[in-house]
Amino acid sequence: MRVAIRGHLLADDLTEQARQLELQTEAASRRARYDAMHSDMGTPLVQSQDFPGMMQLCAEAILRGAGTVFSRIWMVDPGTDTLLLCDSAGLYTHLDGPHSRVRIGEMKVGRIAHTVKGVAGNLGIGLTSRPRRK
Image 1: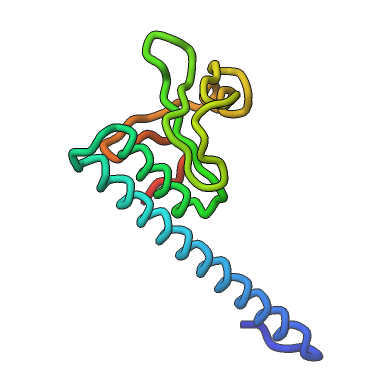
Image 2 (image 1 turned 60 degrees about the vertical axis):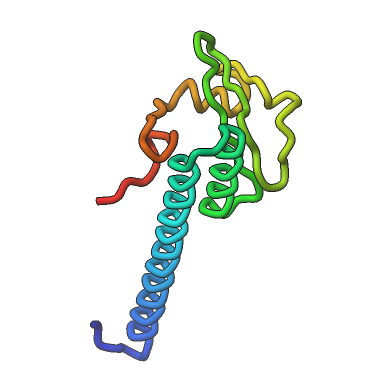
């Protein structure tokens, strides 16, 4: 802790400490949401449900966990370079339209699929660039 000279350094230190505490609180909240999302996605994947039901529950879990207004799940159509929209939750729930079938490399989601290597795990499909636990 620095000694206050004319009161400025002490105020700067307190402001910085408050900012660091806010960042830590936000990070802890985000981590808790991600953990809950992971759990919420795992449950339907291990239950014996139909595929559309599983995808709907996963899309809803992603929506809550990511804190976004909508979430979508695409899968690669086997033997093709096309992403198929499996489910959507939140603001946009329709599964038809221009986003229902997207060639890899086209549109935003297709470019992401082209440039980021996907990984399949026991709790779903994600991006290799997602945050990992240490």
